[in-house]
Each structure stands twice: as structure tokens, then as C-alpha cells.
Length: 140
Picture 1 (cartoon, rainbow, N blue to C red):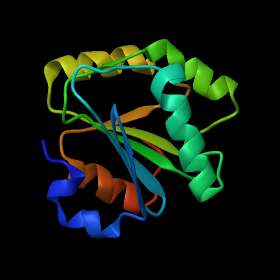
Picture 2 (picture 1 turned 90 degrees about the vertical axis):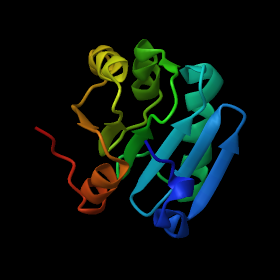
Picture 3 (picture 1 turned 135 degrees about the vertical axis):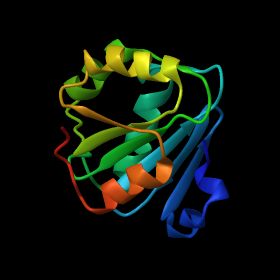
Picture 4 (picture 1 turned 135 degrees about the horizontal axis):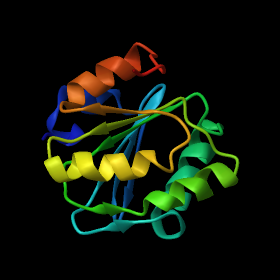
């Protein structure tokens, strides 16, 4: 698994947000998150801050954005907190997860129970970004 910082894509980043729990890279039409190892990622402690910062920078509710979770580290997601995301009137054009871990794929299945739309899974960051750049929101 590769970080945005280790790719030529770094030059396309419009803004980088660095938090104690991870890094967010804002591109035109999509964002990429890289959460640090051991984090128990929740709405109140992490996601709400990211959503507010991205919304402020881009002036959007997220409905025109694809969120790519680049899971280069092992961390937990409070899957039920997706309900809080939607309850606060935020949306996403698409949600992609990049993971090559069997545990990561299992966690993704749990997340999909609480995420309102379909989640697209990738084993390569480049594949996920290429898909996002095409603007493809519909996933099979």
C-alpha cells in the first residue's frame, strides 16, 4: 500500500489537512484520507472535524465529492457513525475504500450496513483515483 506522499499525485493536491489522527488530501472532485494506525475513527472525534474543514475549503455539502479511504494503516471505524454523517445533512457522490487486507474487507462489509449508498472497493490507490477522475459514481 502506498501513501499519496509517495506518488506523483502529490503535485495535484489542492490542500492538505494534517491532524493528529491522520492526513486528508483534497483534489479536484475527490479527497483521500490516510488515517494513522491504532485510531478508533469516529464522527465526534475525527470525521466531523474533517467534514467541516473540507466543506469550508470547498464550499460544498460533499454531494459533488468522492471520498477515498486509503487504508495504508490498521485502524477501526465506528461504522454506525455514518448515520451521524447523513443526519447532519452531508452527502457523498461516492465512497471508495483502498485496502489489500482481508480484515479491511471484513470491516468494509460492516460499514456498508450503515452507509446509505454502495461502497466501491479497490486494492490499488491508482485504480481508485483513476475511477474518481472519470467521475464515476455508480458502482456495481
